[in-house]
Length: 206
Image (cartoon, rainbow, N blue to C red; front, side):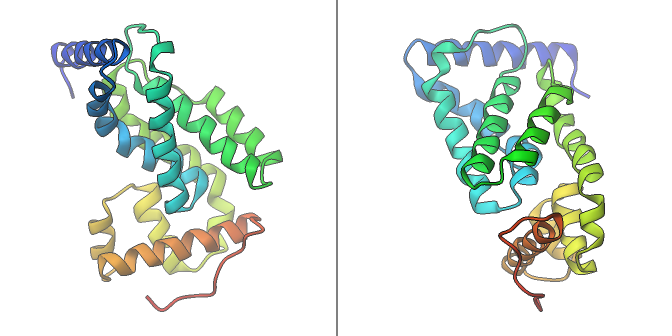
């Protein structure tokens, strides 16, 4: 576990980078984006959208908004991840609203944001993916039972256990490219069983 001294150093580094960004050096915030991109993508955005391409767009949009609004950010002695997570969640809700899937799902996402514990330090960021996975396991358990075992395994490895793509591909004995295709189809199948009108393609042989 990270020491208090190391934690304090990380927070001080964040404060300095944000201060530089607010002074006009917008590139100063990019190291923070690099640090938090993975937990935002795999723990916050992708599980709520289920589509890798859309999730990547939302991640980029989150960072663009953060750069545009960095002047509004007020340092409160806790990691900027809290702020970035708020922006990312709002972007996800916007996507669901734009695609006519707002209603029930957007409301559930908004309620989830209010009830989910938010981190107060950089050390807490390491726990975010596990917490997000716990929440999502409860919500998608029924829908998961409706998809094929192979799809269920792909979702479990990558989205629930959050293993690296390379490890997932090795576990399923497929190439990395084939695993990406398999995961994409698995998520589409899950969305169909969950009630997404976009539906899913048929079973694959990957």
